[in-house]
Length: 287
Image (tube, rainbow, N blue to C red; front, side):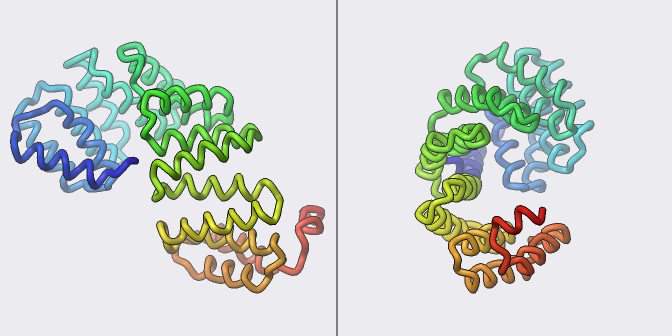
């Protein structure tokens, strides 16, 4: 499972033993990026600049700091500096790919990921990045190839197994998709995306059993990520399909009351509440 807090603790322990050690600091900076710990990332960058300004890891850490501030162009320049210092530093190519993807420059992102894989054919981060690019372009069959390759290199990753399942689901291969999403949940029961997507696949079956299991999955998700309007919204839609309009209304009203609901979401939720008495077939005809 991917536990960033635990990973950060391990890196912090290692740094207490040797603050001059640079190897792996680019990965530590990515952990801090995911945890949104910008102050710690800033301190790490300053420490590494003091230790060795000519190390590629130093410039990757600086790049990740600017990336967290959403300063993508600055981050890209710093990753480029890392590659000038060491053209074989695979991770800098992958981080550059992520920044280009964040800027919607998908061609440049693809080039970076390919460069990373040219240097290291088992660099699953780049495989995942390529999968994400093709997934965004709705090329789900190609995305599947890359997610599957990445998951085979890193079989303990719940995230990779989840996207493998999502790519299958997008192609309508629901049985296999459900199996992969269950594997993702087994690897990390607290992976919210895996549970959300699993609920969607169960609901797509259209059977009462599938809908009931989807409700159970969303209930488990509520315990992990309380206060997510989208979860209550989906729960309301499921209860409507099961014919429990009272429960559906309660879930939809809860979704409407949450701060996580955007104005656009609030509009959709209000429409769903107004149409509780309209069955799904009639509603489809109205749309």
